[in-house]
Amino acid sequence: MQQKEKVGDLYKQINDLKNAHTYYQMVADDYITNQQMVKASLIYRKRWKTQMKPRKYC
Image (cartoon, rainbow, N blue to C red):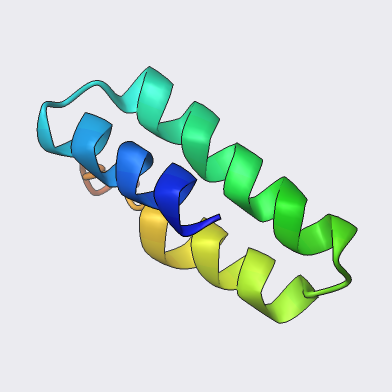
């Protein structure tokens, strides 16, 4: 799992977010399969952060 996470990190460094998300999803799926829901949620929270512009409300 750590290798897949590292590959995702490398893709993220070169701004290839599509492939990064694919590898992070693989890691999260592995954690879920092993009943490690907390670790899976940490992958979602920490790794899938993308810079989003704040929304403007009227």
